[in-house]
Length: 115
Image 1 (cartoon, rainbow, N blue to C red):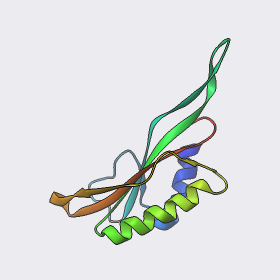
Image 2 (cartoon, one colour):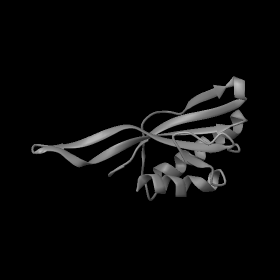
Image 3 (cartoon, helix red, strand yellow):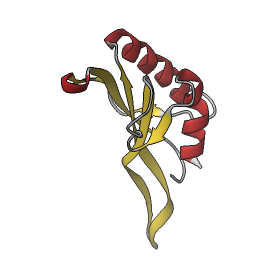
């Protein structure tokens, strides 16, 4: 399953702090979030197929812009390599949450197969 692979491959970057959708309130920084934000379904004449190319959004939060950018580059390298061979769906976007003192990045990738 894609979510299990994302957790396994990205965990070493942030000491296992990889979560679906949102992080628990007490999560130490840095951490990585993943969320499916669409995809490309395979269509057949008989109707929709079961295989899709899920579009996954990877968000990284840190207390440092530099660390967030470094983790984004490392995550991108992992996600486009074996075994996932993800396709970059767009460039990374810088994020900030001033009230919480957080700096982050967000980037989308397409993957082959079922989500």
